[in-house]
Structure formats: structure tokens, C-alpha cells
Length: 352
Image (cartoon, rainbow, N blue to C red; front, side, top):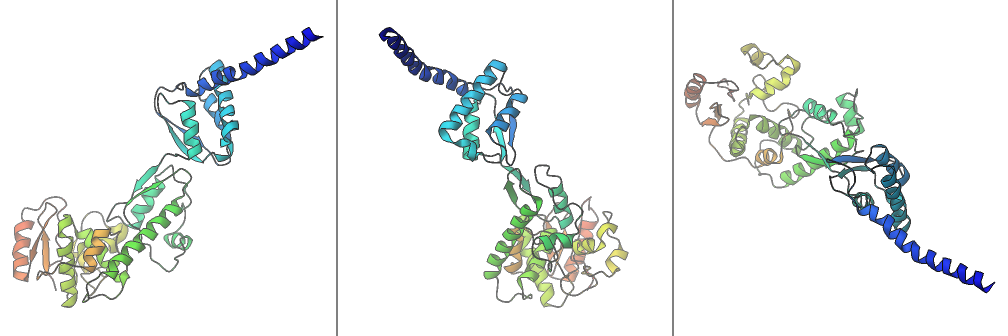
């Protein structure tokens, strides 16, 4: 009897001694590089637990062959049991690089170190172009397809707003699962912040009375500016024309009012055809912005450069020649129109 007790005790001791060794052996498989030859993305879907993630990794060959896969899965479960990470898997995409171990991947999932995607909204785009960019982002959850612009604004909580100009043209970072409407909400909130901050430091004698009018002016400045340093002077020209009761006569407003009729050219008949946006036929500014103005264009609209110029004409290289008088402007138009090239535009025009 005593002999049996001694044997049993010895087996228990061996088992107790073997558990840490076996655990360390299994754990070593967590530290070994996974079987990936190039960078790839691992996705944790909403509601997925560790078991589903491990199954997907094994199915895709990431965990290696049967023996290695089994030991890696066991190691992952041991790690999960000690850390409780199974209840802390963050939804999203994870970047798995060549040479990464399963432990490195698990730690990323536990920390929520998800892959950041980005989308850039460009200064001067209109709302149609903005929606097209978002619709092309396959990592954004698409919810706006088939909705009118008015319905989109309603979903954003501003059914009274025309959408043009209300979204800040910046680079936005997001993670898998973010929706297009969420990103639009961020861009609208950002534009409101920029506009409010700019309006608070506006010049005292502007010929417009509301932040929205400043946003309209900023959109025109944005569309007219080819060289960033000229924003302030371009804004100054338009402010001077408003103060003198002159029409703005800016081509981008004509183009916006033409809508789908615009084919890349503006004809004399287009300049004469009345639309709510044709600043060759209306006085003052159009009823809404015509594009997304960036922060610098908004600042130029509220703090325009002091200038005596009333006209400018494109040189053909993105910059403009500014004139104080109509005679100077007409000469500049002749000079630069005679050798103009593709992409040339001249505004404000000479007609008054």
C-alpha cells in the first residue's frame, strides 16, 4: 500500500513539474513567426470571439500546418484564459506583417490597435464630387446610395441647409465599420468649427453680415485661387467690387449654375444666360457656396487683403495679374489671352 502511495505521489510530482514545461513549450508557438510571406489584413467582425478569429486564421493558412496550427490555437487559448482577452477583442482590421507572431497579433487585438484608413476631401470639390469619393471607399459602410442631397442633409440633422460648402476639405482617418454618414458628420462639424473661429476674428467692415455669406465668398475664392498666396488679394478684389456695387463676374459661379450643361467651355451665351449663380447677370453673391472652401480660403474671406485692385486675369500658369482700372485690365486680357493655353480662365470680366 505504501509503495502504491509513493508511486502515485511521484506521478503527481512529475505531472506538476511537467505542466510548466508543457505550458512553456506550447507558449513558445505563440512567439514563433506566422506563416505569411507578405503583409496582410486580418479582420475581426462585430460579435466575433477568439474561436472564430482562430478558425479564420487557420482556414487562411496563417497558423501553419496541422501540428503548428493546433499548438498555436492551444497557446492562444491559454493566453486568453490568463488575460481574459476574449471579451476584449476590438472590431476592425489589423495589419499582419511578415515575421509577426500570433502573440503580436493577439496583443494588437487586445489593445485595439486597428488599422487606420484615410480619405482626403479636396479643396474646391462640390458636394457631388465629395459623395463620389466617399462612395468609392470600399472600407466605409455605405448608407447613402440612392438618397438625394436633401435626404442626406436630413440624416445629418440639418434639413434646412443646402449641402454645398458645409464640409471641411481635410484628410479624415477612420476604421473599418465607420459609415459614410459618420464621416460626413465629422466633416460638417469640423467646417462649422473653422467657420466659427474665422468669423470671430473677421474684419469689422465686410460687405456681408453673416458667417454663411462668408462661407459663400470663401467658396468663390477657393475656386478662383491657383496660387495659395493670392487668396487674400482675390478676396480683396471681390470685396472691393461688392462695396462699389459691381457684379462679381466670376466664371466658377457660372459653371456651377450650368450644372451638367458644362462641357469644359464657357461661351458668351452662358455668360448671358441668367441662373441664380451667374454673377455676370446678378448683383451680389450667389445663394449658396459653390464648392468646399478650405480653412485658408475662409480666413481670406473674413480678413481680405487690402488692395485697390478691381480686376484680375489669369496669366496661364495658375497666377493672376491684378489691375486697378478697367483700361489696365483690358490690356492685361489682351496680353494674356493672345498666348493663353489650356486651362486659362479670366475673371472677373470686364463688363460692368
